Length: 210
Image 1 (spheres, one colour):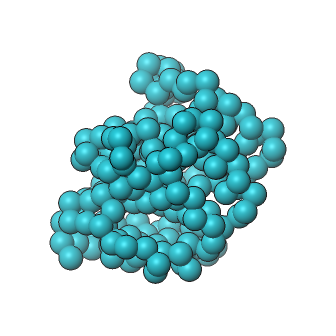
Image 2 (image 1 turned 90 degrees about the horizontal axis):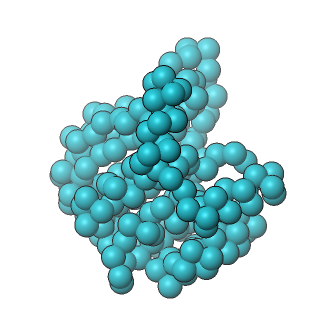
C-alpha cells in the first residue's frame, strides 16, 4: 500500500489514546522487542471482536499489554480476556498496562509457556489471537481449534513474516512455522479463512466445523 494511504487510514481510523501511546512508548524505552501490533492492526482486531459479539477471548503472547488493551476494550461488561505470557517481566508490564487502562478486572494474565498453559484451559472461547513464537504456530493452530467455539474467530499476526514466507532461501524454524500455519489456516476444512494485508498480514479465520 502507498505509504500516504497507509498513514491516512491509520490517522483517520486507528488513533491511539494516551494510554496506548504510553504503553507503546514504555516498551520502546525499555528496549523490549519491537514486535507489538500496530494501531491499525489493533483497531482491526477490535472491530472483528465487536462484530462477532465476543465475550471470551484468548491471546497467546502478551508482551507489554498493547494488543491486549485493544482486545479487552472490545469486550462488553463482564467480558474476559485471558492472555498468556512466558516472560515474567513482560507479564508484569502487561498487568501494569491493564491496570492503567482500567481493565484489570476483565483480564487474566497467565504466566508460562503457551504449550504448558493451553491444555489447562476450558474450551469455548469466542476468539483467539496468536502473536507469540512462530516456530510453534502449527501447534498453537491445533490448540486453537480445540479451544474455539463453533463460529469463533482465529486471528494471527505476522502472516507475511516480513516477507520471509516467500523467500525460498529462508528455512529458519520461525519462517517454517509461519508457512505451516498459513497452509493449515488456508486448507483445513474446519475453517474459512483469509489474510488482511495490514502491516505484516493478519490471518482472519472462522471455525465452521469440529
